[in-house]
Image 1: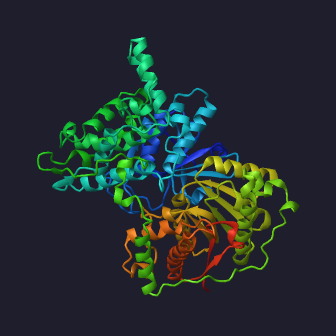
Image 2 (image 1 turned 180 degrees about the vertical axis):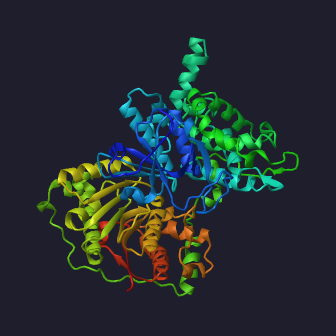
Image 3 (image 1 turned 120 degrees about the vertical axis):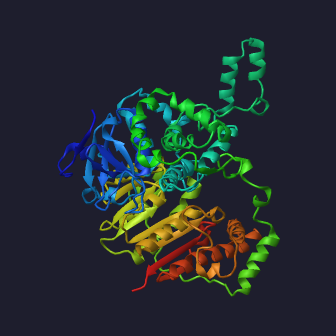
Length: 613
């Protein structure tokens, strides 16, 4: 079925009674103008044929995209798609008529019909689409695109170099290239991300089942049975390295389709100006391999309208100078040891820690703890249903008592700042330990679970169902993709940068926060955050490396008998003082307190903040 269908009344049509993926764009006769994310999503949907969910285009009133590709009326780049190239119907809806959960997310996003569950982000939405299609059409070919054990692009972009490349950087490369190329500049810098992908393909793939794959290839390619047995008996490290055929190794996955959606346009234009085989031969080989795939060939017309745009055809090939930048020769896997230099691999040399602590001490940064906001920290766990307790969330018995104590601290602090009718977000909700207790104890509040892991959210949902709780909504989403309104933000042991992402979300919404940080050594500057966080710490000429030393030392909190613990606690105080100083600069009244008893966790800090009246 080709073409678009305009959804005039989004409340009544059956379209919203089924699972829907929402994309950004605007319909103009037989053409839709879409964002780069939506373009890649449409191409992927077309590759998979018959996607088992409805595709809804969200039209923005201020969207006046033009075919030039460089309209910036809302700081976005727009790409045309001929609707007739789509094999599925495309429904349109005004942004203000979108369901509330979709309004709370950056798009692309999926809204399920069977429960209050939203999946946000390009990778997560497309993964959901693949799984749903296989569920509805068992044996569907797109099952293989999910990769080994369904793990393709499962990790979130904040922690995965690879997901960040596929979901953010390759998309940004397409937008940046379109912006620059369409201005008819005399010079053009060859996209760095294509060269990064070239280096990635030069490195051996990192596979969970590498030994089995090598043994399979030996049996396939070695005719002599004795030689087969000898080779198959060898250890993994004794066998030759595998070569990248596809983006993630030996099999075509969702990552290949997404990258092809961006790189097809770049390479088609660039080959007019440079000999691609001289610049990125492995990318050219990869591109040729993907181009031959029957599903990709069938979906190529989705990208065809853009290639024929005047802005991409008019540039004078003879006058454009292409500059080839230098990029590090490393793979795009975080676990690749070549990504790390030896001098960066240890931050816990005692002389370095003492130097940073001395710098802060001489600057007069000597934080102290505030008193706990509640005298009543006891919850009568036995008086509640089993699903209420973390015992129902697959919590090991030896950790159960301490987890209950942590929850008592969090819940008591939230009760001090929350009011009836508030929307409370449990960030990094996991299996729902915090959010379930909040939802049960605060029935007049709405609790939103935000968590990247589908498996964890499913466990939380099952417990909610057992308790018959109806004031909970689920967002399977990276922190960055949740954009909804809320009054109180909560997180328990949000690792590394996650705590700072939560605090930034709360500051942006002027919401109260109750946060318990974890994994201080995991803080690192990324595409969203920079460190140090506050102007106070930035004014001390504290380098990023100094800050990482402080963070890694803060993780040396073992037990009271360990000589490093006191120092580690001090470093925790300093990192969290920086975090709270940032909040104070935005008008917050803050507290840094210790959970009680202190032994409930080595990471026993609570950061509490309320906007001043």
